[in-house]
Image (tube, rainbow, N blue to C red; front, side, top):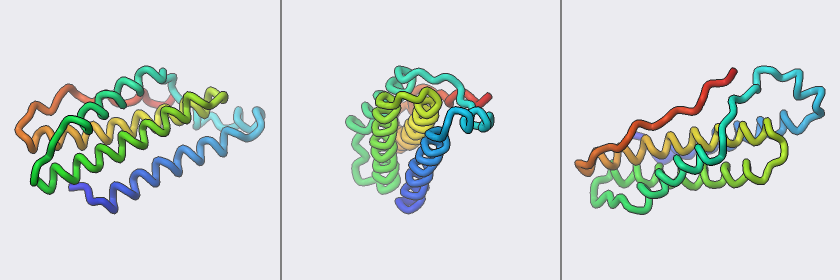
Length: 140
């Protein structure tokens, strides 16, 4: 079971990772080429938006009732939905392609975590957990 404290730490970690990537990539172009470990795979915003929308549907339609585990999982899913939406909007407003890819990957990860939580809610309610959650492409 994911606790509220653990969920907060996870969200904070995601935000700090995105900030680190943005700071590192806002350096000069020469400095950016010296960071090959930060080469991100290509992710299209529509891929992330699809996952975000799927998560949003679950958050808005699932009703956990009195089950405390399902209630917490739905709360976690709602947090990830919000985080994913913010990261996706941030990526769409960026001009630097590498920074955009970093934010898109972080948004994908947030959506995947939220969908994992919503699958738990579905299982606790006796529903089909839904399709598998696609993982983001691996770094080069």
